[in-house]
Image 1 (cartoon, rainbow, N blue to C red):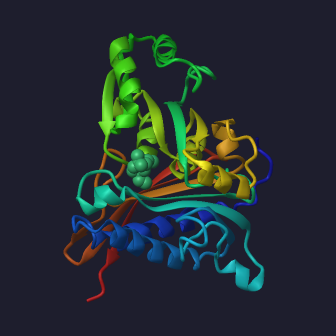
Image 2 (image 1 turned 180 degrees about the horizontal axis):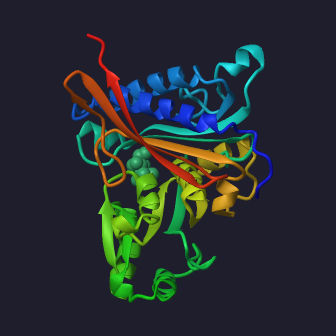
Length: 324
Ligand code: VTB
């Protein structure tokens, strides 16, 4: 799909400022036991930074619906371009602090995350759960499928990778709801890497041979699912997701944003289409990125920014002098 993109490539670098701002603002709340404040700090800073970009942006995945989130709510217009009608129209999915609990506990692996796309290209998902399966790049299309039994997926993946199931590591969120998946994986002989939170990083880990994670399976947040799909579109990999509704209210939320087929299985491309930019900045250090740190009057951030159109992945270290 190499049609002309409406996203200027310079936007890739501009976008990093937004997650850098979110991460830096969260820094003061690392280890302070206050998830809400940590999240709020990231939200405020990210919104400010977004409003400095020359875009006409709309939040499609954010902090919640308008009545529950005063800032970065779904449908909120952000970007300096709205004032004078300039700049590309973009849709924005963000998670100012992916891993609020991780941050509050100063545990590893929290991130500030955002994806940008051309208008209408990101799945407008309600804040419900999503069943997800993901693998990295270079594998035959359809090597795993959300609807196949776990053992079948593992056998197929092992076959495609030319290894034994015993050589596979499955990344799973550490939740009681995953006890069956964990049991099935171990029964098939695979290892499990349990993560406390942060399944965007869990999905991305499947794409990085350094992590030893081969596949991500399980149910996590749907917004995080769309963000992970955006990342995988850039870095290469396969992912499928299906929304999970626990009650009538959640179904109603889906209907309100135009989702009619509640049982639909989404491919990665259906969750994040067209030209997509994905950026993440580490808040606390993890396998993917180092966290924010302060050294001798300088605040240092580590970010990654990627673009699907070109498949470019950049690692960016930011150093900012702290005003004294
Ligand atoms: C996951 C995880 C997130 O939500 O999506 C999870 O990646 C799913 O919800 O970091 P539960 O915590 O209810 O299982 C987070 O933990 C928080 O957004």
